[in-house]
Image (cartoon, rainbow, N blue to C red; front, side, top):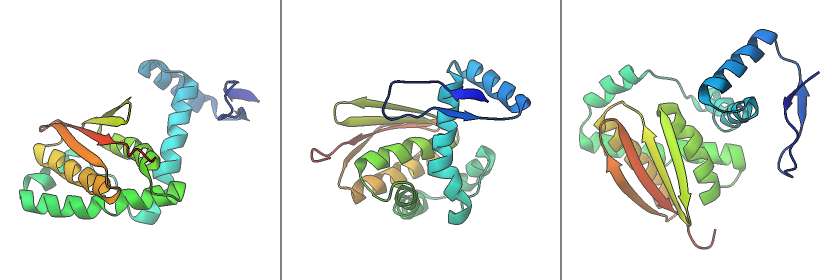
Length: 184
């Protein structure tokens, strides 16, 4: 058996040995090298995405859409429609994923799911500075899509009574901050 995950001294990880097809292994090695990360990190991120997103996608009726499709849909929408749909989606879908993945809707679990969920749209950068979590999403869809993301995240923040601010919004990206409550 080939070691896939290397031994660490962390109490939060385990060693895993398994067999995979050589072609898949070679593809994983190439992808990890292209991203400048270890194969261990790549596999961990794949498993994390599966556990938070993929395993519930079919059950929740989630479907993949191309950016071109999203651009066409959001181009036809008014600000009022975007706000309404964003609030409704933000108030249900991410919360369902959090409850399915962690059984508890709180700040820590919200940040875990937001990072994985938002990665569907493009590049996500998540920085933590004391109690403030900055989430930057480069999606390259449209400004209306950025407005939609702003509304979905505002809805989530409101549910947990978090301070939420939009730092930047344009047709390619949205930058926002969530402030962790003191009691979490």
